Image (tube, rainbow, N blue to C red; front, top):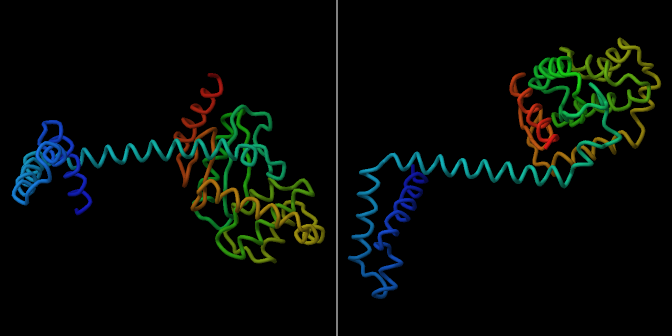
Length: 255
């Protein structure tokens, strides 16, 4: 309520200023305002707001629109600065069409419930649009079990099993203890003895740290998060929303 009142007073003051009744004009014409003049001016502002209360919501909506525009522009600039790390990272697994004209980058955690649910949406998106390149960014932020699962997934690339293993872990309803992860790995044909050794390789943790750093640069605050073209998305989306964003990214590339 206080914020609305201040915002409304500011807007009313601006409108009144155009008529030459502002404190600034009064000061420039006849020196500083007296206490009486200031009180009279404040009454004008108050009366204007009371007579036109709709300006409060109008001003707030304009402010929000301005903030959204500024945020979108800031996001685009951040994406340009980190373009190679987002879209051209050789350490990031790729699915869909590797030569697709639009890339969908997803930051996720295997223990994230929303991530699990949106997998069905993203799979349908890629299945029905054969020109999408999908990039996977392991971003384990929900505790040690998430880190363990991410390390196993990254290490599975050495056996060429990342995509089926990723799918199995996203569909899992059990915990992500070491035995559970190894059982899932075995179910998709992974040599678990080799997997354990590969998980201990320094480059595995290096990839995770690199993804943490990138997420921080992008200002991400939770999973799932997506980058599609020059659009940064925080949180889940429905299928039609993702299709619309992909279409916008595709149209932008043709300009």
